[in-house]
Length: 125
Image (cartoon, rainbow, N blue to C red; front, side, top):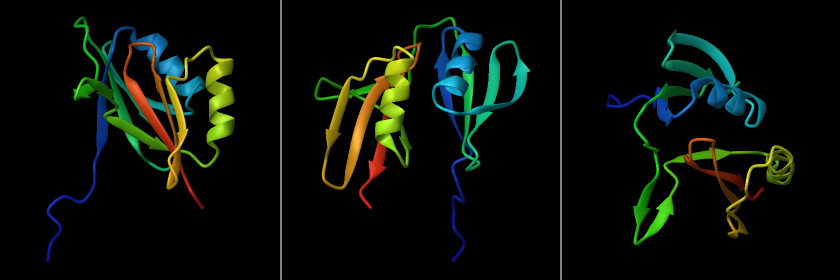
């Protein structure tokens, strides 16, 4: 049987300030810039090959959504060392909004400079 969808190509993320966001995603989260389309679009990637596209937008929009009044993260990442990442985020003045051991994984929520909610998980080994 042929698989209908092979993979997710990228995640599109709206940002207020493209340069600030590119720097933040590189310096804080470890993405690498791999290209630019124009002054409004930057392509970033992880060593694993996963891509995100940062779009500068004049609209105040984020990728967040709510469920029963709770803001939810549409962008979920995985780390091998959540404690190290937490220290790096705090060192870069990123507010940790939630940090919890959920049994199957330890999770942490924070926002990028535009207000896009991020969830990072370190799965239990």
